[in-house]
Image 1 (cartoon, helix red, strand yellow):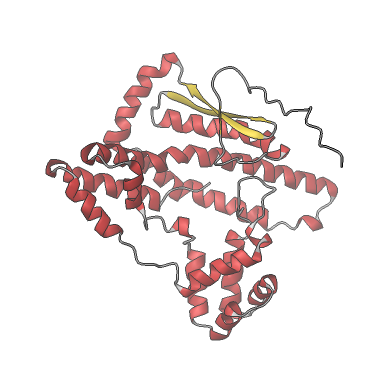
Image 2 (cartoon, helix red, strand yellow):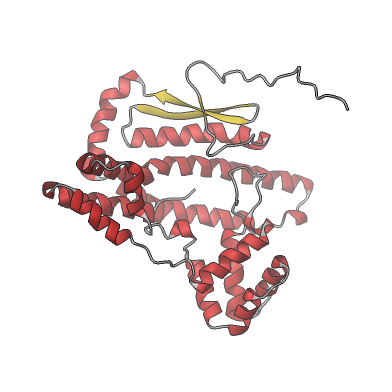
Amino acid sequence: MIAPDTSTKLHLDPPGPGSWEQDPVHFPRPMTRYFQETHPASFKRGTNDFARFYGMLIDGLQICYVQGFGYNQVMPAPDAEILQRIQRAEQVFTQKLWREQLRDWDENCKPSAIAMHRQLQAVDPDLLSDAELVAYLTRCRDHHSAMIAQHMRFTAGAVLPTGDFLAHVGDWTGLPPSDLVGLMRGSAEVSAGGSDEMERLKMAFAADPSARKILESDGDPAQLLASLRARSGETGAAVNGYLDLVGNRLIDGFDIAEPSALELPDALLRAIRVSVSGEAQTASDVDDRIAEVRAAVPAVHRDDFDELLAEARKRIAEKPEG
């Protein structure tokens, strides 16, 4: 038996001067070269946008890759902008400027992004010439890059009201964030897969017993999905509409090499079964827990507690997704 060669060790040089922190949550394994080339500039641009919008004393984050692993660095705000950033931060809380971002997301960015998603999905690459395919892939890459920046630009608005709630209520009650963040449970329907397409799917299956029988039957998941997609009438249209929305979403990770929902038909079928059956609508004790925490808040701050909680739950419920 030949012993393995241990003389060569993996050497990781810092991405640059200063402090860097590896991000094992988003990037637990090496990323593809495509992602390493596409991600950093868009990530930096998006985090710079939210830092400026919210008057933060940072200039955003930058990310670099070492042997495929992502490392983040916080960039300080320019000295010349510090006073301006502080003044902006005061406006953020008095005017609740995250609401402005939410309106922009709902009325402009989200519809525009979804329209482009669908436009690109509608193209059949197999029908393109080599030159057309190159142009199409370039459009996909550019759109992906823009969506990374957009996702990061809206991130602070989704978490800032939640952080404000955790900081104040933690001071008032002495409870740790891990106890308080549970009060957000049930507010984010979109995170649980809620959508107009899913509601349409539920209604279609409720009115189509034979389709429910197919959905609940044993068999190859890919063939079951194909059978449901091929059905005439509202059920087939609803299934196709839902899969057009979620089919290309990545299931485990952020890189393009990760499997999409359509590539894991068993997981996709289970998710549809749970949603259609209503099993996901489990009872929650969140109202009781909110009442317990509220009782621990000094009476003078309880109106503030109600306002902060409502603001945090609303932002989570309607948080933008890239």
